[in-house]
Each structure stands twice: as structure tokens, then as C-alpha cells.
Length: 299
Image (cartoon, rainbow, N blue to C red; front, side, top):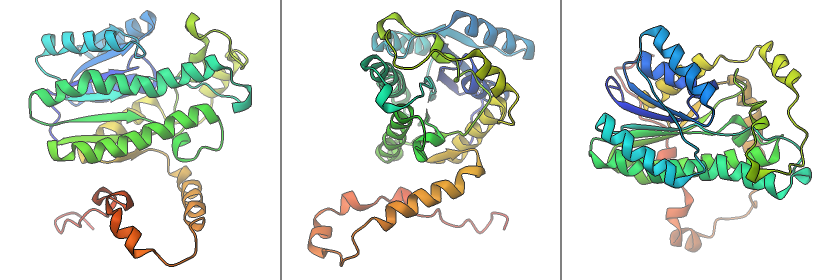
């Protein structure tokens, strides 16, 4: 989707952090932007920041764990804006701690937001993107933790699930002109470190200590990527049609080492050709092939 001007984009969790950075990047490119979030104060801050730039934003209070609310929002957004072209499933929580310490409520909350929330976005908005027949794009926010799950087991589990879902959906929708990207940012300035303090009552009873406000202050002083730069990288990746949108080259060696460990674990024995012939659809996909070289592109 190289021509994004005038396209309508919906960004869940778009009222703060990386989501707001994506929203600002999209607006700067001339897109019509809708953001959703749970916290009214964050939605108000986003609307104020957009107004400072002279841009419009449709800011809505919607909980991604509520499928009925998501579907209602999709209907209303389509009615108000006439179409929906882009969905960014960005809402997520950074619940961290040892897997063994997690309660059933911790498991439920992180899965409901980080996995089911993405599913609800797809169920509510994909039919709207399909409806106009002109293609579109879906970006699912994962994390480098999904590619290199060395800490935060529950969080990394959900983000790895988002990557697998995005890859499958990319393959399913490519013939319809709807691109799908797995967005895997590294450390970025946002409020994800303390976002778990605003925990819904139905998920009460955590095995983890409440977020330390000092952690957020410490994070602000670190040389992380800005949310605005992270947002611009999403815009660039969407325009290129990238399957993976990555941000931090510092992780490349670690991801390569992990993949090498996986490759080395395959049995060192001849391929069973009869078995391989029976399951070619499981063995790979053309989407993993290197892109063709464009002779007109700069060397």
C-alpha cells in the first residue's frame, strides 16, 4: 500500500505509546486516523496532540477484549468514514514475571488482551476492509520478545502467537490485495512498563508485584527508540508490504543464534521423500522466498 493518502486507519491501543506514534505517522502521511483505547485521559491527550498539529483524529474508548464493542465500533467507524483500509492491532499489556508465579488471572488477562484482542480486531474489521474490494493492510503488533523469548514467558508466548497468526494471515489474504505484517519492535519509550497497574477487576489476583513507578522513570532515561520513530517504521513497512516490520538491529545476532539452534535440532538423517511429497503445503511458502531483485532499484 504505497499510496496511503486519504486511507482510513484504525489503531487499537492508539491513544498512547507506540500506538500514538503510529497514529501520528499515519496522520503526517495524510491518512484519516481512528484510535481506540481504554483510558479516557490518554484519548484526551492524543486528541490534544493531534489538534496541536492541526490534524483530526477520531478517538474512541473501546476495550479490545469485548468483541461486541469492537464490532459496534467497526460498524460506526465505517458509517462515519465511509470505509476502512488499515487495521493496526496494537493494544497489548506488558505483563512480566516468572511463568511459575503467574495466577490463572494473569494467564487470562494477558491472553485476552494480547491474543484475543488481536482476534477481535480481525473479526470486527477485516470484513470492513474486504467490503470495498480495494485491498488494505493489517499490522499486528508483536515484539522482539516473540522472536527472542528469553524473558517474560507469558508475554513472549502471546507475542509469538501474534507472529504465527500474522504469517498465516499474510498467506491467506495476499491474493485479495490485503497485506499483513507482524510488527516486532524492541525497547521503545511508552507506558507499557506500568500499564498493568490499571488492571480490570475481573482479572484480580495477580502473582506479580504491582509495577514500581520508579521503573517508568528509569525507562524514560534509557536510550530507547521514540514512539514517533517506531510509528514511522510501521508506515514504511506497510508501504513496502513487509511481512515482518523490525526496528532494532541490536537483536539481529540473538535472533540468528536462536534460529541456528532450531536448525541444528533437526535430525541429521535423509529426507523421507515419500512423506515430503505428501505434505508439501506444510513445508514452506513462497512468502519466505527472497524478494526478486528490481534492476531499477539503487545498488
